[in-house]
Image 1 (cartoon, one colour):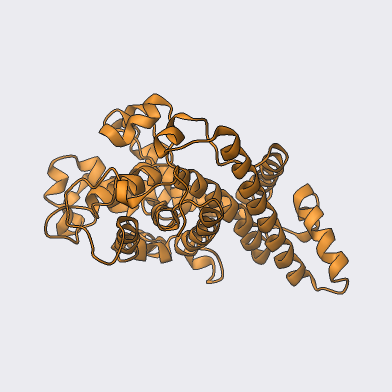
Image 2 (cartoon, helix red, strand yellow):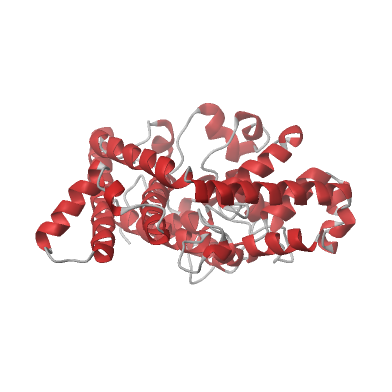
Length: 366
């Protein structure tokens, strides 16, 4: 692995919260990745969905498949830019560990329930998972990840919460940037979910091919596919078009970011933190992605079938929140002692850790 001087380097990591002896065979970012993969929260992502609730069908994306797709895209970009692939992979695999069941609907509902108790941010919850909630090691709570992995996981954070996080929250207060690896994962996340939401929306029948052809980026790539394969069937046509859109976006971000790095000439990761964000799409491609996101919001996320699912999901989270607030003893024993300290936050931790199907089952039982 050939690293540029501005890439994150595990040999010069800012360290872990608890000191540990180094591994003889793996660098620190590899160890972070491995701990994430073996965590309980990572396994539960298999039954947490993106847009369609888990029982809608087995062909739709879950948080787990999404995280794997983000990881694959992130590694490719990191390799092209000579950044640290293991760190990019670690951040990508962990970025959604704090997501609630039922995707953004669950998060919005839990945030509303927690409004008087500090709110709920899924990025901050992902950090809580790796810092505190995973209970696997004898010497510490959490996974004891490196600073670099932890800062990458915390993609967004309100200023109020940042002030309570110490060093890991300082960049939000100082308006600084995280590592290039964290920056590129943020873009890989958007590229992944925009394109697999097209796929899931089309497969579900909610999005029609004719409507997709109104999106300039989709139309451009679709016409090129038709030119190369004149007799292609519609299903393959959509998949081949999505593949080309992703290739176009990833190529653009690699090219644009390489140019930004050449202009800025950063020599260290510390310089990366004080410079403007360097991992970016070109202006034209960024606009094309915005148009795609607007299309998805109107034709998929605001579709009556999806709205019905999200409304049901929000009700489930709200009902469960107040059910356990009123009687904390109904939570598993592991949460009983914790609930004496900050009951609303403990209930939020419990709910956020649920899978779609488990939340549905508990709601049905009560």
